[in-house]
Length: 77
Image (cartoon, rainbow, N blue to C red; front, top):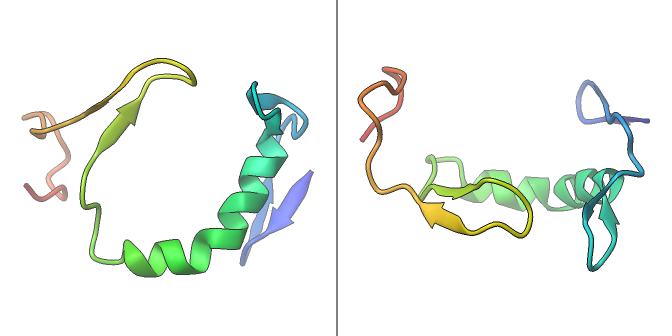
């Protein structure tokens, strides 16, 4: 399955369920990102406002408060 977003992106296994309870698939997620991309990218143009880390669906998330010393030089803190 491919999507054109100014270039072709291949979505492997588009039927794979990523969110079990609502049964959303990889293709559903890709289509959602395409639908909200214009507004989301415009709002995030200045860079991230916070960093929330998700290890996997259903697992607890956490906010990273400090950038590690090993971060790339282009990440501002």
